[in-house]
Every structure is written in structure tokens, then in C-alpha cells.
Length: 442
Image (cartoon, rainbow, N blue to C red):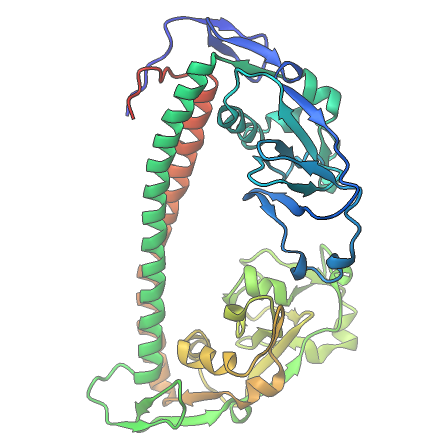
């Protein structure tokens, strides 16, 4: 879509803003907003928390001990107030309250004092401020420590564009339409990625449980989540295929920037998955002293590492395997699984990635907020063994098929990023007057 500019511009006098339409005003925040500090005193309010997903009612029960916390010094937020986590401008956000509640006394709460204001227009401006580091540029603190705040005086004096209320409303109407259209396109790409992932899982599950020969005689595996397998395959509990042990009994404080690479449960969940290679992947390290004191926690090429806890049920059974000859330690909250005989580790990686194996684990795990995956559970789960040459064929087939799907997913992810960049650009150009949307017809 082609957008036109305004007929004439003027220098706003604000470096980050640049030129604005000639008829626009530029005003300090103190002429538009009033910072409030209403202390709650008593409970009876929704407790609100702000993240990049917006201002939401806090899930108190998910945090141990939160129910006993004293909220009397929190500040009241009324419907329509703006709330900003100005204490953490690196990751914080700003939003408009949709319910009455209380929020952290460290947050910045401000209400509109000018009647000629469309709140959604200024919300776009403030959120743009985070994305473009505008507010960050005026903050103070220790950025390297993740604390970067915006003082009240600085916020009050910070100048923002101030078009007429009619033009603010026109810009908001335009952005509502345009961002909804872009969000729909993004959602379609995200759905396609989901379908590709489902296809990947289906291909893996079929290949590792049924083999590549559609005419192979089948037998009942005796395992609920596995069903029939080729007649010549062997079905055994993992205790007969793997030796199990646990990773280092350390904490995050033991990690350092050099030494021996180390993989802990959090990285299994969020960073690596399926496989890792310290020659390729960015990793944390532990001291070389552990080579003397904890050599049994050192991984061999082809060893598997399971996260022994998961914060969500679906993550139960998450694993990775070492696809390298480098020295790597299994870190905290991990279980090591090492093949007893000369099988193909990558084939078992595909087994562990299959629905048939993961569902067995998920029927055994226990927990409510945190789910534990013990060595005992992993030992009693069934795996299956085709002949080694057949394992090779299945791995070759799955590597090729998964690569095709990964390339398709990468294209969709790239398109999503471009759409998000375009969305941010449209918002930025509209709210700062770089494009004229007054004649836009939704």
C-alpha cells in the first residue's frame, strides 16, 4: 500500500521525533498526563502485573508465598489509567488498565489530564518508545544490571507529538485496521508453522514405529502408545537399552564463561532440544576441576540428557543428545542416558522425539506446577530396536524429510519477522506524522 506525506512539515525540536506536520503541536507529557500515587492501604483489589503482553491480573497462586504478601503499599490503578514498568525499561512495557486494581509501588501510574486525548494514540506512542528505545534513551541506571529507569521529572518534560483529537482518532482507526490485517497474516503463517510441525511429528512417529517397509509383517508391541511394530523388531524397557545416571549437583552460581561446556535442564527445555554440539552452539561452562571430582557426569558422544523437571506437562520428556566428540558435562536437574550396546544414537533421538515414547513418560510424571521426570520413570518406559542397518535407513530418511520441513518453517519465520517489522514501521510512521492517513477509509 502506498502512503502519502503531509503537505508541509516543521522541525519538532525533538531529536528522536524529527519533522512533524506543520499544524501539529509538540507538548511535554506534563501537559497531557498527571502522575498518580494512590496508595491502596487495604486489599480487595485485583493485583496487576505488567509485561510485554500487557497489564494483566496477576496469577498469585502460581507464586509460592504470594498470598501472604502485604499489598497495602501498592498503588491503585483505575480503569483507563496508564501503567508503566519504568524500573526496567530494557524489558518493561506500558499499557492502559482495563480493570481497577493495585500494582507495584515501583511502577509509574499516570492518568490523562487533557480532554483532547485519544488514549490509544498515546499508547501506540509509548509502546513505540520501548521498541525504538526512545524512553530508554532518557532513562538512568545500570543497563548492564537490567535496571534502567525513567525519573518522574524526565517523563514529565519528555515531549511528544500532539495532533488534534480528530486526527488522533483517525490515526487510531487506521492503525486498528492495518494492524488487524497484518496480525491476520501473521496468524496464518504461525498456523502454517504449526501444521508443518505436526507434519514433522507425524513423519517421525510413523517412521520410527512402523519402519519404511509398508509390507513388513507386524506384531502387537504390547505397549499402549506404540501399537503394532514390524515383526522382526525387539521391544524392551529402557533399563535394558541404557545406563542411567544424573548430572552435576551444581547451581547457576557454578557456571562460568570458560572451562568445560555444560548443559543444564533449562537449556534442554528452551535452547537445544533434539541435539547439541559445543562447536556450534553457544554454551555455559564449569570448572575443569569437575574432570577430577565428577567424571561420571561427563557425556560421551551420542549420550542423551533429559531434563528431570518441567514447568509444563507438555515439556515432560524433553531431551537432547550430544552430537559431538567434545567434552561436555551434564548439568543440574538432568538425567543421563547412555546406550549399552552399539546402536545408533540418532535413531533413538527420533524415538524420544516421537509421540509413542513421550506419551509413556507423560502418563507417569507427577506434579501440579512442576513435573518431575525421574530415572525410575525413564527406566520403565519402552523403546524398540530395529536391526542397526535399518536404524541407519530410517535416520537417513528422517534427516532428509525433517530438513525439508525445517527449510519451509524457516521461510515462514522469516516472513513473520518481516511482517512484524512492517507492523512496527506502520505504527511509527502514523503516530509521528510521517504518513498522512486523514483520508484513509476503513
